[in-house]
View 1: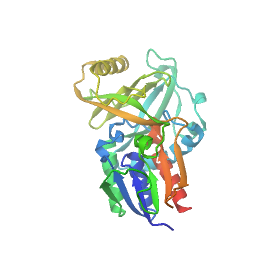
View 2: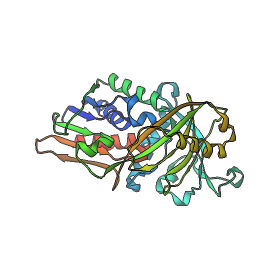
View 3: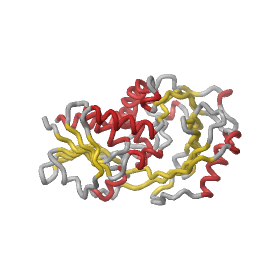
View 4: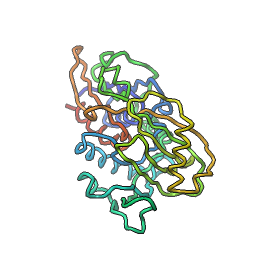
Length: 315
């Protein structure tokens, strides 16, 4: 059994994978170009849902594995940042989802009286909603408790490590591997004071660069959003921000006058062809396990993917 593992990346995928490996008995070091609070994971609205991720069948299994763990973590929300929150997924039906949907407790088609004006149908569900800054702190603390360490370090290639490296570099895999199939999907958010909202709402058209979602978090309400393919722009756009607030206020009018607290932009690490989760032996002899390309569902599949990585490292 190989004991020493380097995990590249300190976002939710990297830290969750590192925790899983450390608690499996490995000596784990995380190499982080950015700290957890500076990664795209910290920006995420972070509702558990298999959004913009392929391959669908495998992603469904990873998502369900994560759901089981998040449900347990939701018993300690102040510590873990995870809560189970009810909400509405617009213009989506059970029949249009994969087999994973039948295994989500309480997920169902909404009754007509539960559908907001302007929408034809939708789903009701009570699923994990994660306060990402809090959750990333929890993961780092859990990693350190298991003997793992996080080092601020940037690698030039996956071959610079010891016997095993796990590549959770997200968007960085485009240059690190290199993998030209990796590309950004820009997401812009607005954080406002909460005027009394206690349920989440999502209306996401996968064919559109504009989405509408409302996520009540302990620090305010996260309003979104955008899904701009191949945009590297990390600066918030005032015009886009106003449009986001207007879209969300059509669903919850009380948001129109809510005080704006913060603007955020994150670049989702998408990959043409879907997630890459596989092992390869590098010319140096290093075992490299790739775990990147999770698009808009990194939080949703994090624990499931981490378990898959652990199995590959064991073999």
